[in-house]
Image 1: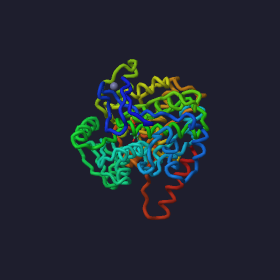
Image 2: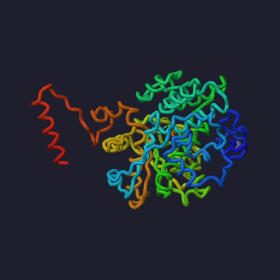
Image 3: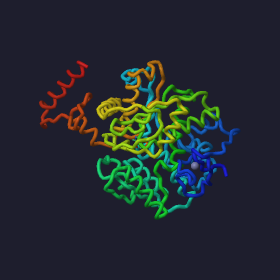
Image 4: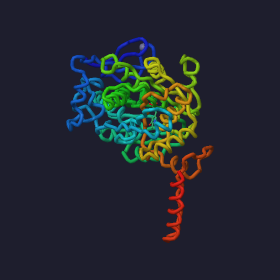
Length: 432
Ligand SMILES: *Cc1c(COP(=O)(O)O)cnc(C)c1O
Ligand SMILES: [Zn+2]
């Protein structure tokens, strides 16, 4: 067998053809480990697939199949195809944040509008390998949207648990539209996460939250693709938001593998950014990363409104591998950074803006140096959370004063009224 499940702590191994999320002996998280074909794996192998129309190598996940799931059979692979997302150079935002070079890797430009699609292609492929008929997740929104779409695509029943409040409208609409069985549970995300595992165990349903290690195998390709887009030149920093910490864990594993395989000559440093109101990893980092104290989560960035991240241990490992750091930003900083990203014509949802807000803060604190090269990960699409955007620009968000508002003008249906607005607007732009 080319791939096995291995406990990250005690090393106990399990075959991949069984449903399992944690180690039977010690309860720790599992990794999917592969027996890499070192003779075959090279920059040239992956570069040669750029631009191909051939399934599944046209996917930005399966382009790296030898690193993701080498033995996966074509008939099992569920791909849209995902990935192949842009890496935007952004001189204007680099200047604002105070660094020489800033790229934004826009994972919101995936089929359902978030990086979760890279995880779902891995998760649904494994669901097919296992032959399960139902898959489920608890979600702050994007995981549900992605699961619903990929399950429908694969002809498998999708089941999603939503929290009781603050679900971004775009995400809820997607899960309903794609035909998943949607259950709104009267509890927050952390409780829903427990419930989905209990229900799934009882009813034999396959859980596709990021506790599922096959999700992370897909998500680690964000690093592979970023490095390939940079022609395998390693940036100094990778900066990403952290909620359940699946993505940052996956980044750590992917970068570590690239380094071990000699595909990169050094590791970038990872900076994980949390919202002040949902900052258990940040708090743990302040005290040397020796243990997690769950918090009650509150933030406008609903995608990372998580108080008890399931992948804590893997995120700690990623921070150790990459000499990483953890920073926190306020909802005010998040929404202002989002407005700046949006105004570039790039756009993202609130949680994603942690990346830019985090870069600016780490530069101010002297952690990121002005001459360094930074890649910020944008995790979700601007259309995911229209309410947050509209309320920000209308000045109706509680406790937030928009630094970069774009007010909606109201006009009578008359040339005179409209001209007056446009003339005033031209004066405003001239003064800028
Ligand atoms: C899921 C999600 C996150 C958080 O990722 P984790 O892997 O849970 O840390 C951040 N931003 C967006 C848009 C997301 O959908
Ligand atoms: Zn173990």
